Length: 332
Ligand code: DGY
Image (cartoon, rainbow, N blue to C red; front, side, top):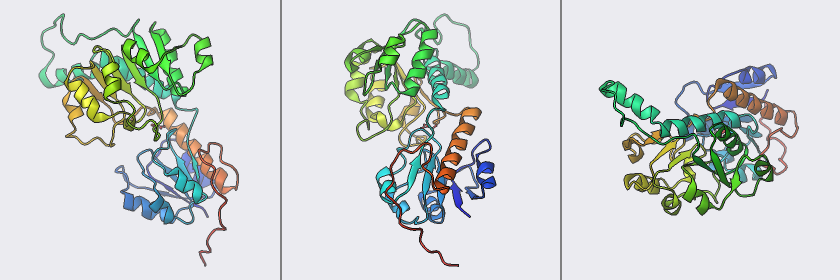
């Protein structure tokens, strides 16, 4: 019987699906994630693992997991997994593309609107200090309607954000690793150099994966090129921003604010300077957190695991693992 370690409770029918296919599901029993040592210990005896973006899977951990055939990340990103190590050890790594872009795009817009129109800030102030007198100057912010949006990274999510921007009559500029003729032909966004985009955008939204090339790519220079009135939105990965530079930029009024669903590290410690600014909105990495989408993501992860157990290529691989040695003889 194949044993699958699942690092957190997931919504939907994914775990029942694994069980009904004959797997023994070892579900981490509490909300608090396993420590690295606990993760290593549970993965050591598993044939498959269903993991989350917050589970760091490194070479040392994989060295101690000789039975492991597949790591199915319940996420489209997989920067938490040492891909090279997994591939070398013959372990499939899979992700969940194609199901979360619309949900994350909704949330990107929620952050953008909330930061512009000061939703979270005014709610917080009202709860803490009462409603107060109505004032024509209270909580004023920029219009979203008709503003210019700069999208950095035009993948599935960037495109879904651009589609939403159309409804707000926004001008959309984008820059990306490669140009997207389809996006341009549909009139969803215009290509711009990074400097042009930063110089013109009222809102800058990041949608790049975290890779060695994108790590901290958004730093002092990029922040300095933004308009002082502009707001930065990040639903990608905390690691793509140089957070110290962002703190400086906010402190010195170089940009008008930021809305961050991701940070480095996660969880962001409560004494972090970013929490001290009223014009920085922080949510705990919930971009894909609709019930339907999270259920679909977990189900996809289960399908990936089961395909590997059947000896098939999984539907959503992100690596090409080396051929495996025969499974170690566990005796018995
Ligand atoms: C992803 O899928 O990579 C998200 O960040 C997790 O919700």
